[in-house]
Image (cartoon, rainbow, N blue to C red; front, side, top):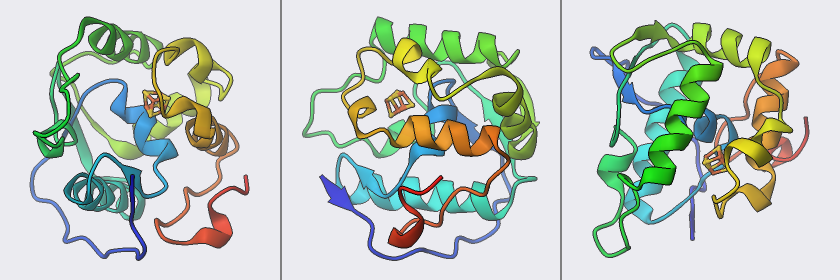
Length: 161
Ligand code: SF4
């Protein structure tokens, strides 16, 4: 597992960030962990772009997205597994979103706050190996309490809600 040690300052995006359903929740729990150095670099860029620019437009997609594109070729790929696609649909249904929608990240946060609780992660993500870290539940709860998500690489804020 790789860990990002410093926060980055991403350039403003001119295009929508393409994200699949379950990654909307993965991003809330992102604290700098990932599948490889390149995966972490890419996810940190996207996380900080959204965190620092809540009006950034997200395009909802079906299947592999802007996070999947950095998944390492050396690991077994799960990006198109049926259970992963079912998880996308579960999250999108909860948020009243569908592939093809374009929506500001701030609106997604509002919908998460209204419709999802941290305790839902156990049900939504029963087969995910990252769930045990508790960071996704923490992230959803933060959003529900209208708290800021922590900057990646800010350990003083990593586990406090
Ligand atoms: S438990 Fe896994 S799939 Fe669910 S939000 Fe966290 S990282 Fe994503």
